[in-house]
Length: 329
Image 1 (cartoon, helix red, strand yellow):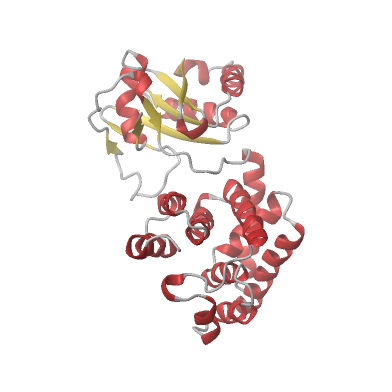
Image 2: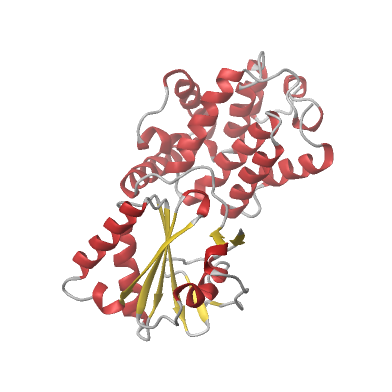
């Protein structure tokens, strides 16, 4: 099965997947587990901007739920881009109630862009050129790699994002005390769990700090309590060298039960975290998978981290170490 590697390629293929050139349309591409292509639904732009727009959007969301869609990509085509963006947003808001992750794109002539993106590196002024379509039958495609973690419902993600922001704000008052408190949040979560979007949002914010992230990894190494303290303090100490040997590998096998707990928590964090905080959780999962002698899974998690932050150093370092020394013996 050939993989569609990004939104540009998907946009370029939609006319052949539909069998016609969409115009004045909103197209929802539904994706199942592991990115398998599901139903492709088309509505007129007018259906999503007139007085009955909410009803049409609800129908779209209901079909997505019945299809068992895990993700959705909504693409708009309209001469009036304001109407097109409004129609796309209406469809996306409805889909977020039944689908874990929703992307939105607009096509304007030979160019495409994300209506909600304000980053010129991602969506430069005027959008990006729609690439030439690769040949292939409609049944031969899947969309991207499954990230290994679904996205929580939109309402839970919003609650987690607000909690993450509040926790980050606390760092400005006393950063060292904040790091200690963040490490305690993770310790408590390992002992008691973290049920609900607010605790998961705080854990995501804590992991955004490099020292807290490194301390969490060291918590998995038996007898490394001094190394955890040194990591939080930013000290490159003998205790850390003793806990992590050559190539960032733990000198003692990580505690299996603790690894399972951390992995479950990190996946939950990734499901709820705002996009800007996904890279730390994904990269940490990559390190753990590598320690667990699963370099393919480690590469997949690192790829997800780099999707969110192309320069995230832990993911780049982990990939380099895998290439240099392979998986742990």
